Amino acid sequence: MTDRFRAVIFDFDGIIANTEPLHSEVFRRVLAEEGIAISGQDHDDRFLGINDWEGFLKAFEEVGRTIDDAGRRDLVKRKSAYYRERVGGIQPFPGVPELLADLARRCPLAIASGGRRREIEAVLENHNLRGHFSALVSADDVSRSKPAPDIFLRALAELPSATPPLTPRNCLVVEDSLQGIRAARSAEMTCLAVGHSLPVNRLGEADRVVEALAGLLADDLLG
Image (cartoon, rainbow, N blue to C red; front, side):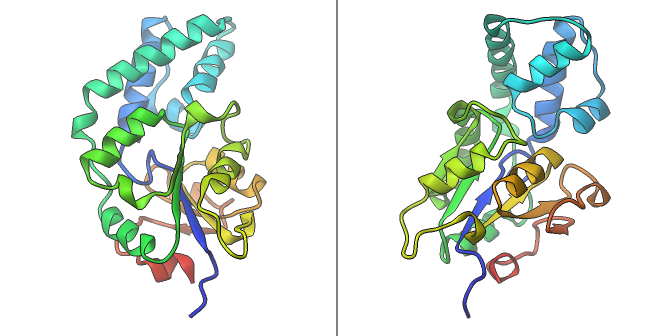
């Protein structure tokens, strides 16, 4: 059988591991310390898929406040510290370790995430998943957040060389957010959306939508 896709690029938060609730909680905690209140639903509706650097700017702009780069760096640092306090409790989604092992035997895998590298690597290493990925691109590595395509194109560039060379059309992106779906499509990559974080009826911009990754095999993604 010839696989339709020759590489798979995964988002991390809300796809590999159930981190989105914790990210939402600590993001909102930092904003509350600054006198800005948003609900969990607000976070999911307006900030899911946006990296922290852009997210904090957006939150301040929406309430008519300004913040300089030093201030944003402080907010990102505080959020990261709160997150790391509890990262040991983060678990991969059911079925994901098995799916990654199956896929890694067939094609190169990458992560392209708006999260921070050390936060991602901590979870991967805790669950012995890091070795499945040939490339890992985080918010620390690109200047523009999703929905810009930069992070997916960077991940493609960091995958091992292949013959013939990999192109965006050879890549399947696995995402859970609207911003991520739009970034994948802007990168001219096919997108599989997973209803881990949002209801599947909100993910219709993707090429394909599934409720969860549990029970899926490599053939279900690559064929």
